[in-house]
Length: 257
Ligand SMILES: Nc1nc2c(ncn2[C@@H]2O[C@H](COP(=O)(O)OP(=O)(O)OP(=O)(O)O)[C@@H](O)[C@H]2O)c(=O)[nH]1
Ligand SMILES: [Mg+2]
Image (cartoon, helix red, strand yellow):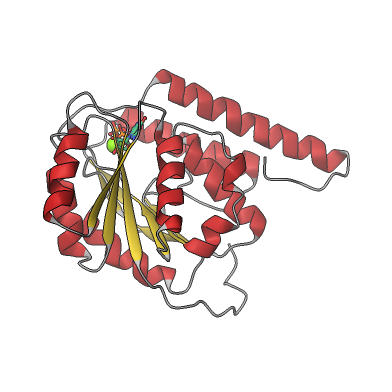
């Protein structure tokens, strides 16, 4: 990561915290309340994939009671990546200057949002990071830690991105940063979506900053992590990495696809 090249970064402006949900009825009310308390000026967009457990209806009730809370109802479960892309598009259409990714399950602590936003004053993209000094995970089984650290290390080495936590999903983007990432070409669905956006940001030359966070294992509701998500990540990261290497050998300019 570079030092920003002495660039000047503009003021932050209005922020939108995008929370994708699928069956988070036990978590949504608490997390929305915590975000509102931690960053009172920010707005929230719940991007719900028609959760069978009624998360969308609960979010509607929260939105009816608070004009800073909004809900994007999607027709069915299409994965985290598609929900975020729809959320980003909504946020940009509505003129927000900063777009934030955050899980609904409490793993990303809203109380750490002000630190992410402070760091964004001098960056194009801020990543909440478990694997930089000061970052940590609480109550995670060793197997999950192994998978997450292993996934980050594999991606970092294969894709040549100098980021310690490349799969994390607690992030703050400037609107201009998102506009430069080529989102129309992103097809990643599961958590390789996060790897995809990070590698694009590095390739464009954006100033990416990792801020240590304390990631807390979810206490309520079920994980959506699945074997398919791991297989998709492994497959896509390997394809990107091999493609770039072959491209370099053939002397082609790297593209972000
Ligand atoms: N809209 C939408 N949200 C999703 C989808 N899959 C997961 N999410 C949400 O994305 C966030 C992250 O999903 P998690 O199940 O917590 O995934 P994870 O953090 O890898 O797994 P755990 O550590 O076990 O919680 C949560 O807020 C989920 O509700 C999806 O297909 N659509
Ligand atoms: Mg989670």
